[in-house]
Image (cartoon, rainbow, N blue to C red; front, top):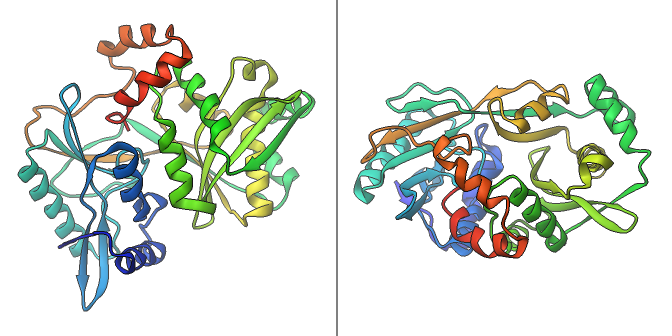
Length: 341
């Protein structure tokens, strides 16, 4: 096994492999090593198997270490999907074993591999999240027609609310809206530098769509594009977004924009905690949930981790966080969120 370094040629080989591998996702790209190291300071161990100078499998890993949240080796933090990407079962097993060996060496609490599919191996499995997706029609009307009737009515209403949208690479307005939105949910926000780093590293694969009402930005989403998919990843709205239905318009217009301008076939709505509010919202669009099969190997931990906001021990913290001034939440949040991805 080898570890990805700073060599640009090897990074290009890594990304070329991910592009052609059936299990390769946007979250397996080498750019995540730069993002996680630069934005959060975590040590990355991007492992790969090679034969005759050809990459056969990759496994991106990041080492998180916190006195409050413990130590973990994760593939990959801040990402929906992870684990080994390879079309060779033996290579997958070998890379998983390499990850276990590394987890033991680093003396972490646990190893986490975020597989989006079921996999038979020696690791424990936890299906606490589901992902949602929607195949896009050829035009705006067919996209709208494929959405569940009740949600379609909400979108039609939003189209009457004097809302406009723009598409750009400017992360500032998106971050401002997103940070207020997650504060209102009681969740620590990521650092602004993280958003800027995503745009810098992934370039045209990272895009911002913002909805405005009477000149004021009310909803915004940062999305990724890869292999014919659009992935709305960090989105939110101001309090008035609920009445304006601007979040609903935002996702619909992203579908239309992605289909028309980026030759996108699939809308990947990302993960949500099963039975959470976000989970129910995505089901309301008519998308069927697909369980994510995250796998764990316990090293020092005695039970599987539970960093979910539904965990009772976090409820007081969440209630207090919702009351923080926005400026304070933006200052303190990044110190906590770097371990919550």
